[in-house]
Image (tube, rainbow, N blue to C red; front, side):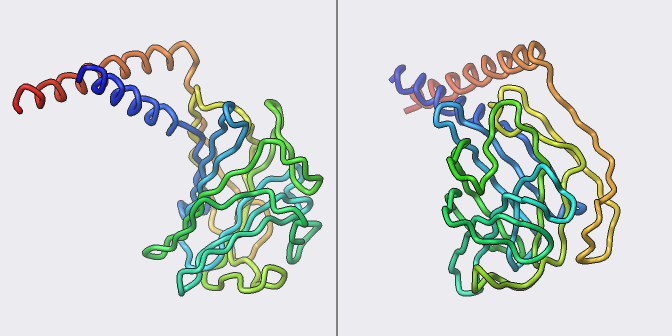
Length: 238
């Protein structure tokens, strides 16, 4: 019984730890994105949530102006519940080019109560010349877009975005979430379809390594103690 209690506690703690990552919000909270990197699997994991019933786009670039060389995915769920998800490369303003090698893997796509959510992952290095490859020092701009109503019925021809933008600062993606970074961004409202840079103010809070480790150790000890107490109490009550 004691072994089961300890094992249960360890599993919950690992789940708690792995939920830490980088989260960013765009377009006055209408578009949220989060990601994390697993060194064990050498993969990047993403989740995006947008207030739309149409398609959702998310990706990266070194050159955010004029949709130049965006490594992006576009996905969503149709009105009849069919998920779609595609990997693209842009060469300028216009419909992006479908990658010959689809390097991103969709884990789940949902549309509920006006929110479209995508969960997907990719290898850090996809060995694809049409994708951005990441190392521990690669910094990219985050790009995002969505269509308020229309889905993608044809991956090579679909409706233009109604909202789009990109992060003012570059981000490092291939770093494990041992020190969580939280970004809060406030955007000045722009006209739909405006491709100019969104004005924003940024507040970055980054936990220092030593302080975070101390707080995490305290939380860990407290969590284990409480878990053991309740599970042992249940055992004796039975």
